[in-house]
Structures are given as C-alpha cells and as structure tokens.
Length: 67
Image (tube, rainbow, N blue to C red; front, side):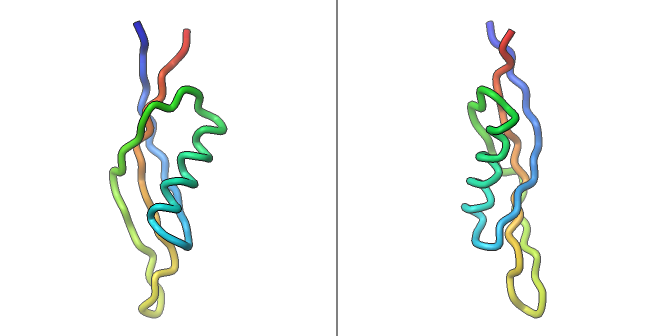
C-alpha cells in the first residue's frame, strides 16, 4: 500500500508558462521525493505598461510518502 500527498506550489518565470512549470517542478524535486505528477490549477500574467512582465502558475504536485 502507498500513501500519496498533494501540495500546492506557485512558480514564476519571465519567459513563459512552460518555463514556470519546469522551474517549479525542478525546485519542488529538491525538497520533495517521489513526485509522481502535477496539474495546473491556475495560470496568471503580471502585466505592466501593456507588456507581460511575469508568467505565474499554481500547481498541485503529487508525491508518494515512503514509510
């Protein structure tokens, strides 16, 4: 039997939503072991002077707890 947990993280990038997702998972993997999946709960843009300044994603990351 395995037990999984879900945690929510927010990641940002100045490049793209894809980059924000990749950076978020890479960072989460430094502190969470056994990540098995993630889904995007929300995407946001930070806009200033009519230009995109930052891409922001809120992800729910699933990882398996080891006993």
